[in-house]
Length: 280
Image 1 (cartoon, one colour):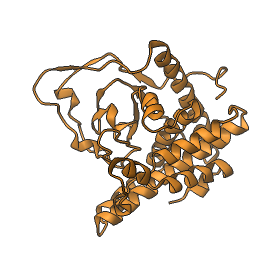
Image 2 (spheres, one colour):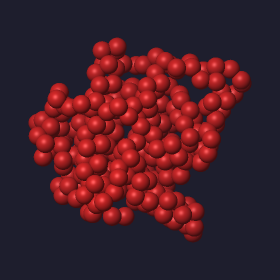
Image 3 (cartoon, helix red, strand yellow):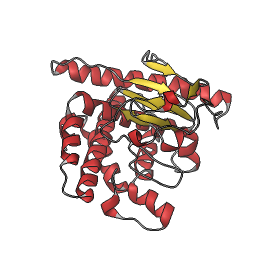
């Protein structure tokens, strides 16, 4: 991506290197809609962060060191802030055009583990959005996980991940999250609730595509960027993750959508640039 002339967002909270007590790692409330949670350890999907509380005894917990080199982490830090700034511009314009005020999310950078209003966030879960505090939580080492474990690398692939989480924030600000939460609570079966979760995730992918469309229009994309995002969308499909983990997929257990569904949703937003095509 061509972001050399892009400003860095100020809506960033850098917690890297901080130390937390076990008490601070207990969530203050339920987080609602499931974020784009990719569990790389054990291939466990659809984690509700409110259920991940405490880490045992009353003691302090220091965040782990990054798997990235100092230079790589520094570059990703700057890159993530710039990507967030582009999403603020894209969605700020959209909200303004519709007579609304856009309140941007805060990006929390951390290492290993961190408290959130949705419970304890851990890097193994991947990036996630917490609607309770309207923050996106990101361990920059996820870039290394994408490259080594998901076989999806490149700066635009990483930007797609951030844009997807911002997509969940858009759902929250537009009241979509609250409606889908209610639908999940009244679902007649777990399979039906899972399908609602899939629809939510695919919409966030589509919103990420809308952002990508604007990046194309601003001439910020380079050769191969789109392909990087396509590979990333496919890499985090439930069917791909489950097959890699257990050798087979169980469609009724999907919470984020298949590789084909995720790719198609992102492509739909990317080709139109219109959030209206992202309806649930």
